[in-house]
Image 1 (cartoon, rainbow, N blue to C red):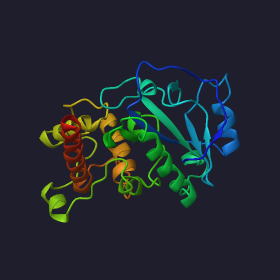
Image 2: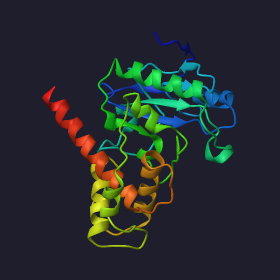
Image 3: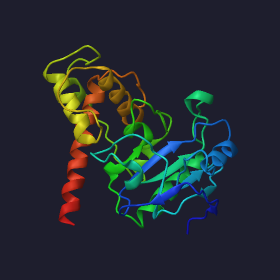
Length: 253
């Protein structure tokens, strides 16, 4: 059975229904102590359900049945009240502002175990296990490109896809800010279908760049530059196929 320590936060309210999404964050503060203090401070009006420290220890701040205040403004797959639909997990890391670094082995093992434990109680599709940056590309970067999303997916939680070289080559050259045309329309539509709030249609504007960057932080961490090269687009196509197959399986079950 998963072990954790209760550290109750007063920052929560009622849900409107059962959670069906899981959002991973990093704390983005200099120390774990500072982060936990803020998540439990009534004046801060922020919280999360769990905090996973670098040594693998887990604090439980808010009951899963309650609506913790971890996501703020954002959206995923049409859901604009992410807090109402999700369970939030904060992973201790100073983040891009204070010295972003790799996540220790004990911490990642604990996150994987926690995600598995959460999913044993709630129906959460792989396509709805996401990062904070996926819900809010214009203002968030966490948990960032150093978080091992591939490993989490290999443990059975979340989507991951790596295309064959010929599939990448078939998509041609990169798309980048300022571009327009059919390729950009298809790109924006695909990102929207996966879950991002980016609307279909339009050109490769700043919102598109930020959304591509968020996608890369999660699914193409070797290159986070907001340019949709063939590899980025091929991964998007593959992920859409996986998400579609998961959706069909869910309906059949």
